[in-house]
Amino acid sequence: MLEKLKFVLQRYCAFIQKDMKKRILLSLITVVVGCVTMQAQSKKWTLEECVQYAIQNNISIKQTELDSKTALIDKKGAIGNFLPSLNASASHSWNIGLNQDITTGLLQNQTTQFTSAGANVGIDIYRGLQNQNTLRKANLSIVAAKYQLIKMQEDVALNVANAFLQVLFNKENLKVQKEQLGINQKQFSRSEELVKVGSIPRGDLLDIKATVALNNQNVIVADNVLLISKLSLAQLLQLKDFESFDVVDETDIKDENNILSETPGVIYQKALESKIESKIARTNLEIAQKNVEIAKGAFQPTLQGFYSFNSRVSYADVPAFSNTGTIIGTKSPAPFFDQFNDNKGQSFGAQLSIPVFNGFSVRNNVERSKVNLEKSKIAVEQQDLDLQRNVFTAFADAKGALNTYESSVVALEARQGAYDYAKEKFDVGLMNAFDFNQSQALLTNAQSEVLRTKYDYIFKIKILEFYFGIPLIKN
Image 1 (spheres, rainbow, N blue to C red):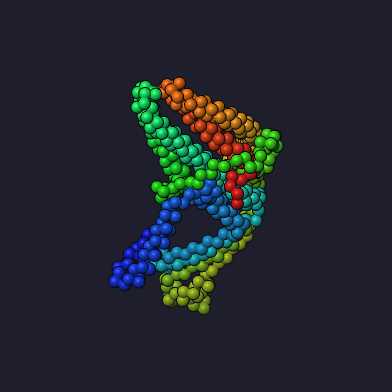
Image 2 (image 1 turned 135 degrees about the vertical axis):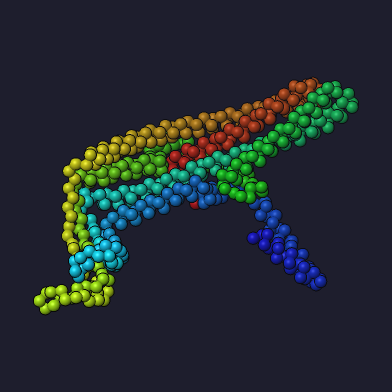
């Protein structure tokens, strides 16, 4: 849209270039377009926007949506089993060669033509409740497909959140590296002055110069890591134009729901009610039960009603009879519709089919469906156990992440104090450059550790909230 607007403005510029007033108007419009362009390029995505966009455009989600449509088609097929079947047929044939003459009864070479048409209607009256159970199974399959779609959306949302937080971590890490570079560059300039007045040896200046070079390298690496993390998130969102992609600096994400005040048992019970994985497993169990009932239905007799209609038309001459019934010659065939009406025939009735022996195929299908039912029961039990383990593990991880983050903050405060003290000693010549650089490196590591543990804690809190039924984003 923006490119089209630029093209129109260019054409408009060529048209009004001789008119000064219109030139002024064009300049104003160009400024507006420039502002719109800058705003478009400076757009930064929030976590909510990223998740919503991913849910609408992710390829895996689109594939799962197609599975839901397939389930709806299967339901239409199940409904169709209750409807009668209607089939029509028609044929026209030529018989060339040695055929029996219908007037004389003798064989002779001739060509005859016949047209026939018919229709058949059939309907299931009783089929061992297989049609009813198939329809119930189709309804359950639709529910399962919807649950599967929700699960895919939740998985994508969690992946997006993880990638989003990784971008935030890399952003703050880049800031830390740039701040350290700025500090060291200032320290290098100050050390040059101290070397000139003889306060520190020239070797210390070379050590600081090496540190500045290393900081430059760290900034480049951090910048590349940030770019790659942005690219990964953009690809996860299926964005085509990802060169200017960026996210907002949401550095104040916190445990707003105080989820750690809950017990793991309470969170697990809540997860049993809300988690899609459990609903999928239980729906699949119901589907397996319907499969057993459908398979057992094949043991029962089936009753079908039928109706058939047919007629035929001949184009050959027909014999002419006298009043006494003697053939006295031939005459032209009757008109088409007259023959069709005279030759029509109908039949209707009911057909009962009782299974007696079919090579154990029905019995094997029942046994197979029972095995699958047992598998589904085990899957439900396993899902509950996995959910319980995941909830308790997530709670322990979140608790440990909080403790690690708090410890890293304390460590950073101590490293900051040690660095300030080392800097004071270095400035008055009581510490050499090597020891000062070591203190600074420990401070940088402590800052990076605070960032890492902070976003690790945030993500694990999101996981725990997810099990508790709290949505990842607010609607």
